[in-house]
Length: 611
Image: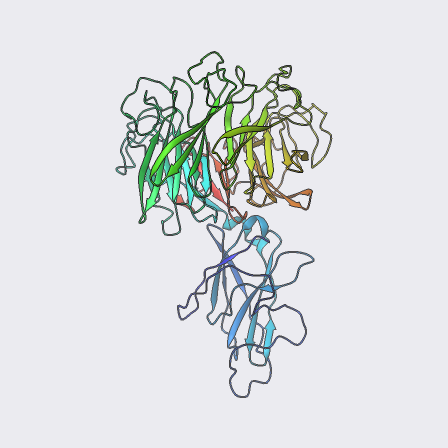
């Protein structure tokens, strides 16, 4: 089960923290056992029966917060908050016994849509149960609506997202932000599309995030194109695909501006609660238009970094060879870097064994937690058969590749993966995501054309242009069979389901977005029919039980509107307890958390939603 976090305080100010438990630990109780459970406290003399039932109030707050309160009950010595996840489950205690009159609960909204809550009022004689309240009545009001601290037009805040493993640190890229200063005036708009990244943490106010810029900002650098956090949230990599320095390797001349759109990556580390730039990284074969930094992946310890350059032009098909070859336009490449202490170095220059013109190898990346396995998407690769990498008869079908690092720190291609029914222009590989152990891989194909809905359905249909699909592969006995073919439950032409996807660390939760889906639904499990709301966007969560996948939740913004492209950015905590979704073309003018979501006066400023 995806757990809650108890954060409330008692009336006397004592804090009750820690994750909830559904196990057999001390203090757990069930509702409806008839005679009430005996309490743990010391009752007053003469208490011969449980107190009267309380009346429980539930009020939502952003982000993801359920606030419970109740009036004091005569003869009650303490209270217990109980949770029931849905039909067929039992009420179980959340957190510890409560000696005050309120309790806050940070809830994973996606997994609490059917939850109900009750309160027991207890004394030495037992506990009495109150009438349950239901999370569905307040769910959408708890969705976090987050804007930049310096919201402005065309900033595209939310285009890239990353969460720490526990979901408590969030990085948001705004690659169109125009600020020209470093840690200075956020209202300065003197440098077009320089880009910025906003960092939020447990102790960072939502309206005052850490505001990160490149050490040498430049126009059209698109700093924030991609972001990647380490598992503990103390290391951050930021891609700037439009950066134009001619430097190569580590910590070169940032001021040089002679190689347009070659791209760069910046590493920031948290040292004593201050974020400092640790490294400025360029490719070993910097060239104009390569887009180095378009995609990033970081190991859980922050010591292995993969960088995608999908427009790199080498025709080499051998790892670490042919860097200076420019005979295959937009073939793409991936660069592996490792950190020792505070020093970064390039470990490998990675190419596909069937590298070819226009493949865009490196458009999306994912690493296993330990950094030993790499998944690479090449959404415009032309192969039609996973068994024949030399076949180029299916234009822009797309492919995914797996690479492993051996004990000698040598990277090698291990698998070449295709959709079960490759077709022209499907763009299989535009999204890739590995589970923490590297044994499950999800691949998105946003231009796949089947009109089917659900899981394991007809893959041969081509009647819904760019409806999109997702595929799940699972390692078994040294092979990678396709485990599931997943479609949206509400397929629509041009919805582009599969634009972004993320697996939980255990591989049992999959979030998929469709950033141009057109329903007008709002929040959790709202209306899903095609309403003609162009490019509104949607997200979906699927869960795996054993080998079987099932659709769990349909998700929309709390202020769904046309053109917002909700789902362009996506991040998922390791255990699935926090889901962040970016709508980089949302038009609100608010700043910080919980502002006016109905205002549409700041075109393409962008927003992030927290569940």
